[in-house]
Length: 74
Image 1 (cartoon, rainbow, N blue to C red):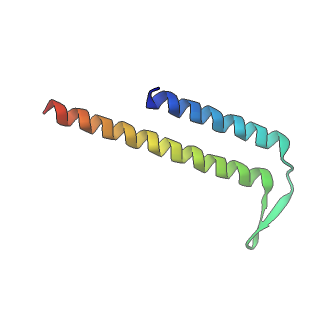
Image 2: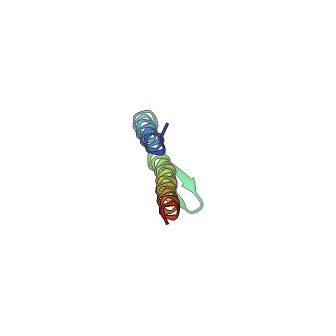
């Protein structure tokens, strides 16, 4: 399986998890340090961070593959 397919599958999984979290979790605030954060919002932020991490990994892998292919042609 290529890295692009894995990336797309990961993003689809994060979207599905986000939809499930939105529909099943209550919107009650929870206390984090001195701030009140809504449970849905906090969950979606964490899922967004995981999706961003997956995107960074995908971009880094693409750049490394481009550099390796450029070195091999030299």
